[in-house]
Image 1 (cartoon, rainbow, N blue to C red):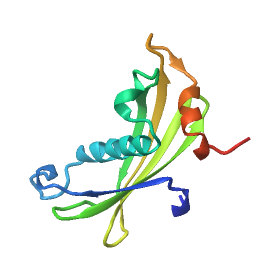
Image 2: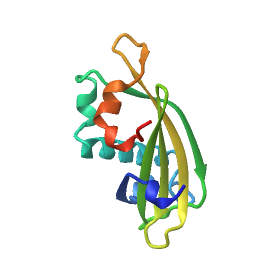
Image 3: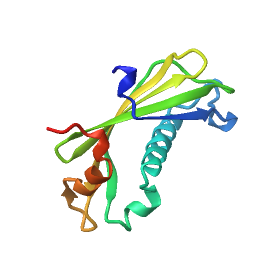
Amino acid sequence: MAQNKYFFTLEIAVRDYELDSEGIVNNAIYLHYLEHTRHAFVKQEGIPFGNMTSDGLVPVVRRMTINYHTPLHSGDVMLSRLWVEREGARFIFYQDIFKKDSGELVVSAAVTIVCMEKNGRINRGDELVARLSKYFEKP
């Protein structure tokens, strides 16, 4: 997707304890990078993740697809970028991670989020849409 689609960018440095025995970032650590980026994004928008449940928003990951393109190593700095689209009751966070120094694509992911009610039922996420309305195209 075109770089101008990104709503948010977060700079993250690789920490040595995130490396596996081959000296590259363990594949499971990318889940943390992606989640940290989504949490930082909603916090920037005035929706601290810790307050979501008490505010009646219970977002949960329903599906995640990740494509690994090139590894990160100790000392690398990445730019974790995202944009979000709404499809019915689903919010699709498109997230890409790039090496800061070279711009090389490291990971591309699509994370599907749905909003649950406290009783466990999925709702349309209208409260989340209202809070992120500037990012959704008008019909």
